[in-house]
Image (cartoon, rainbow, N blue to C red; front, top):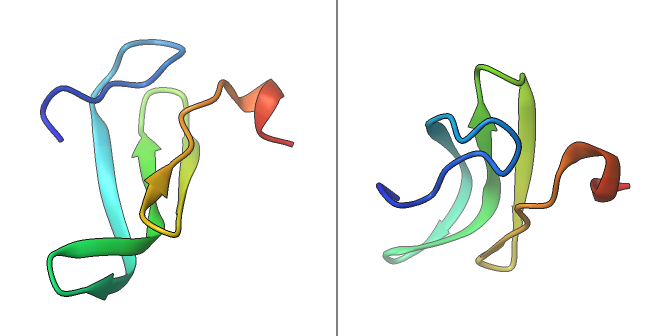
Length: 55
């Protein structure tokens, strides 16, 4: 987690957990407070694309 940063502003990301399986996060989001953008976590994989590429 400490090496992940927002792909747009390089700001710190906050982890929002929706579902866990043991030590793995299966769904949730990484949130950038500076950009106010959620980067989704789906099936344990974070999608760190800039907001215009998420749709």
